[in-house]
Structures are given as C-alpha cells and as structure tokens.
Image (cartoon, rainbow, N blue to C red; front, side, top):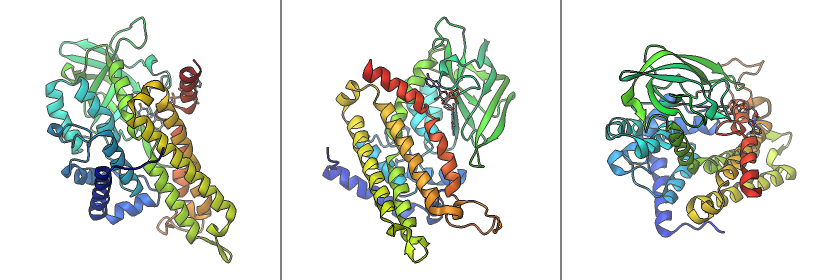
Length: 390
Ligand SMILES: Cc1cc2nc3c(=O)[nH]c(=O)nc-3n(C[C@H](O)[C@H](O)[C@H](O)COP(=O)(O)OP(=O)(O)OC[C@H]3O[C@@H](n4cnc5c(N)ncnc54)[C@H](O)[C@@H]3O)c2cc1C
C-alpha cells in the first residue's frame, strides 16, 4: 500500500505545516530537536496556541473545544507536530481522560473539565500503576471506601509521570472486593491538593525527574468525581487504552529522530571525513528509514481501515512493540553518533558549557523505558501469541 493523501488531506497537511512554521517558538523547537524533554511551560504555552485553532483536542467535538477531525487528519496533525519538534498536546488530558469523559462523564463533569483539559488550565496525570500492580493492573489495591457523599482513599500509586506538574490525577481505585479482580474497580478524579495526598519524586536512569510516587492517606474525594458507574472503572480503563492508540507508534517522532541522526552524521567529522561518508552508517540509516516507513504504512492501514483492525485484534500490540523498539534503535544510534558530546556534563566542561548534543545520552537512557511503559514488550508478545496463534 502506498501512502497517498487525498487533495483535502494534502491541503490540511500544508495548513498544519504553515501554522507550525509561523507559530512554534524557535527556542522550543531547538530544545526538542536537541533531544530535551519539553518543559512544563513550553507544553502549556504551545497547547494554548494549538487550542486557539481547535487543534489541541482535534478529535473532540467542537462544543468542548475540539475540531471534530477524523482519524486521518488527526494522524496527519500528530505526525506533523512530531516531525517539526513541537510538544504534543498533553496526552493525559487529550488522548486519555478527554475521551473517557466524553463517553462516561456526567454532563456536569464534561462541562467543567473538558474545556480546562483542552486549554491545559488543569494538568492531569495518570494513577494506574501500583508497586505490585503494573502488567497485572487489575490486581490494584488502592482502596476507596464510601462515607456519605465522599470516598475515603488509602493506598499508593507509582511511576506517575509528571505528577509533580499536575493539578489532578485520574486514578483506578478498588471500591469493593469482587470475585473477579477486574470488577469492583472505580475511576476517580482526585484533586492533588486534597489533604492526605502526597507526592514523592523518583529520579530515573536518565538523571531526570519525570516520575513520582503518589500516596493517599485518608484522602476525601467527592462522589461527584466518580466517572462512570461505581465498580465499572475497568470499562473506563479499557476505553482509555483503546483511545490512546492513535499515536502509540510515534511515527512522526521516528522520522524526526532519523532526520536528526542524518543531520548529525553530515556535520560531525572524524579526522578528514564526515560520519556520513561511512557507507556502513549510510546503510544503517537506509534500513532504519525503511523500517519507519513500513511501520507508518501499517499504522495507517490499521487505524483507517476498521475491517483490518477488527480482523487483527492484536494490532495495537504490533504498533506499540515495533514503535518502541524503533525509538530505542534510533536513540541508540544518536547516542553513538554524538559520542562524548552526548553526555550532559563532561569532566572537562562546566554545566554551563553544554554542547548542542548534550541531551543525547539522557534521551538514550529515557527511551530504555519505552518497552516498559504503556504495556511492556513481553506483555505485547503474549497478546500477539494469543490473538495470532490462538
Ligand atoms: C517511564 C515510565 C513512565 C510511566 N508512567 C506511568 C504513568 O504515568 N502512570 C501509570 O499508571 N503508570 C506509569 N508507568 C508504569 C508502567 O505502566 C508499568 O511500569 C508497566 O505497566 C509494567 O509494570 P511493572 O513496572 O509493575 O512491571 P511488572 O508488571 O512487574 O513486570 C516486570 C517484568 O515482568 C514481565 N512480565 C510481566 N507480566 C508478564 C507476562 N504475563 N508474561 C511475560 N512477561 C511478563 C514484564 O514485561 C517486565 O519485564 C510508567 C512506567 C515507566 C517506566
């Protein structure tokens, strides 16, 4: 299958490109191009620029601040943002919680939360994983006990990305001990300023603070912040994971990292020649390009043809597995090309004299986690074995 955009899709893509060129601040673009994670203020500022155009939550209905775009346009928008080294709209707000509220939220919850999610007036984080419940998420133990018009929440979440930036958390909690562990789980929205909620940082192998532990000690949460029915939170969780698939393969980011690798290889010299003059490296880049292209075509086929998706229930696992592996290969290649310049602080330099490639090693380390978060590779392979082999 070739990837030919229709005339209207091509016009939309050109429109997106022109908008990004005009509105994305160069400083944000350069930081991300160099491999830094987006800062909170950059994500907020850029999401608000996109929101003015209806593109922060492109697939939501217009009445809640979206643009009602179809899957193809949404894919094009996400890919162009990533290719241009722009921050993505906060996935916890836009790709995860928003769709859940649109499907399961009360009219009051939709009216109150959705506009704030789109404009990033409220930053949400995701409280699913617990110290003993990751791949086997349904075994989670954080408890919420009904007390009048509140739940009293006790327990702990872990690996909570950006909880230290967040205002609220959407959390899976156990509201009853049911026979089947998927039952008796509820989906709660919790204000992180609630007394009894505390956050502790986890510094990961890249030396950065992205992750946290979140503790609940008799935290009182209004029943009005329950999403969907009590005990049916697993339905919300499954719906959330299905909604998250559109960008699971990170195609735009793969192209962007590959382009950056080519750029470095053309600039960095080893003796008299450029790294790019090495035919082995040229072949490696060509193979990676072919792999990204194959994944891109697979992504489009699965996401745009409901028939193919229906007949291949494990499709999201293929995208997650291959997309995360490719991102690891690309960040490994970048770290190799950057060499010692990719280290944040070299022994001979102060922290102030940072090399433009200084984020390369840290990104390499960060993406070791790509085959763990969002469902580990081993678990994806289990799913594929079951769906493909029966
Ligand atoms: C950078 C990062 C960001 C994250 N952000 C968030 C977040 O914002 N919110 C959130 O809720 N969670 C988050 N997570 C948690 C993530 O979802 C879990 O780490 C993941 O689901 C794996 O769970 P676990 O860490 O408990 O490992 P475990 O489930 O204990 O797995 C340990 C090992 O056993 C393997 N394994 C487990 N089960 C099977 C099986 N059935 N068959 C074969 N092998 C198996 C796994 O592949 C893994 O190698 C994040 C994790 C990381 C690393």
